[in-house]
Amino acid sequence: MNYKDKMNEIRTSKDISQKEIAKVLAISPFTYSHYETQDAIIPIKHLNTFCNYFDVSIDYFFNLTDKIKYSPSNKEINLTLSGKRLKEIRKENKLTQEKLSKILNVARTIITEYEKGNFPIATHSLYTICKKYNISADYLLGKIDNPKTTN
Image 1: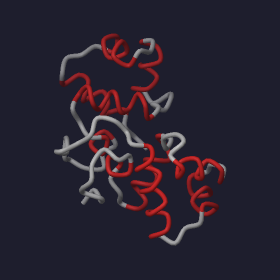
Image 2 (image 1 turned 180 degrees about the horizontal axis):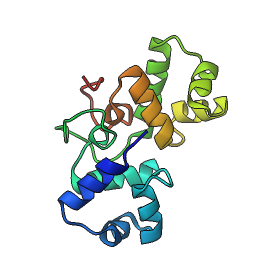
Image 3 (image 1 turned 90 degrees about the vertical axis):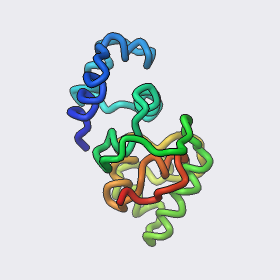
Image 4 (image 1 turned 60 degrees about the vertical axis):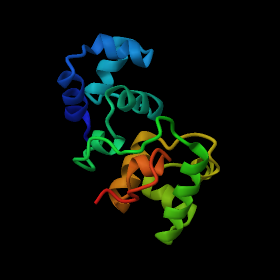
């Protein structure tokens, strides 16, 4: 997962300082700088806020597509729909929760919690799923209904 160049490009194209976007995300400039250098992985909550602020798709942020934004697009992540879609994708690819947990290097119980919609898919797991199975991150998070894939 390599998004640091895209994150910097998005921010600087709008002539916004790291300090300004840190305020938008309600985090310290120090924390934001670690996200942008990828010394720390940006959490989904902050990623969604960042993408909404700059009006770009998460797929574009992840370099999964050249499409800057989708229309129509929901601003908020739908955890229930995201969990349902993750389960569908897992089953379409004939994966058990155990197999998917090994692919993502997380506990099986984490997959269960994602599928129940109890919390959002972690950024690294989201990227891995989308890249491996050619699925749109915005689709998986319930922000768009189409396209399902990034093609």
